[in-house]
Length: 259
Ligand SMILES: Nc1ncnc2c1ncn2[C@@H]1O[C@H](COP(=O)(O)OP(=O)(O)OP(=O)(O)O)[C@@H](O)[C@H]1O
Ligand SMILES: [Mg+2]
Image (cartoon, rainbow, N blue to C red):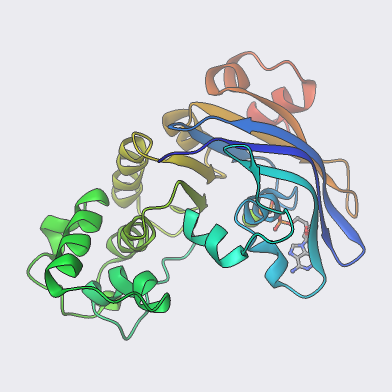
């Protein structure tokens, strides 16, 4: 169910401010792609256009095309809510619904859609999703306890389980490990490696080692200065970006000579 993503001449605005300019990128299904670059270069902004989350802010909009297996998600008549079920998102801080049980967190996407299902079907989804997020063994005896009672790393895996529960095609992650300890970070990285068997995964990270460990391809974004738009500077196999980049800006950034 993993799908291909193609951005074509994508410009992203906050009101009249052009935050990201002219992105062209092709992201293969069943792969992990990392977005790297300095703070403010538009990684989050671009990521949020991939599932039409960007436009929920007043005045925020995108121009250009964003194709999911060839279909433009910005075409008129496309329902952004449907897009967001096909393209799930995991955020920087784990954000399980605090008053909901672990089980209800997993089923939240279905409940929001008003989907009715049998208890056995619900049990099946909960178990499959938690197994898929490598969390099942740790929580199977406490499914009715609140999600907020888990550790930070477990909460982030719960959020990933909640995302995969609705069987998306793409999973977007915005610095998913930045609030986690090294052990939990490795658990999430292992999980990302497994997720690419079934999904297209895009991850924003400030951790170069993480990009090198998890990503097949890496996209380097940069800004020329404050108030200027962020741009995609170079996109290639991860080992090329880190060991033999074509662009001087990429080389300076990955070798720590930035700024
Ligand atoms: N809600 C907003 N309204 C107006 N401008 C915004 C908004 N959010 C972000 N921006 C601007 O858009 C540009 C890109 O920001 P973005 O958050 O995408 O950067 P980033 O690469 O994710 O940075 P970081 O690494 O710090 O997370 C910045 O100039 C930022 O100030
Ligand atoms: Mg960001």
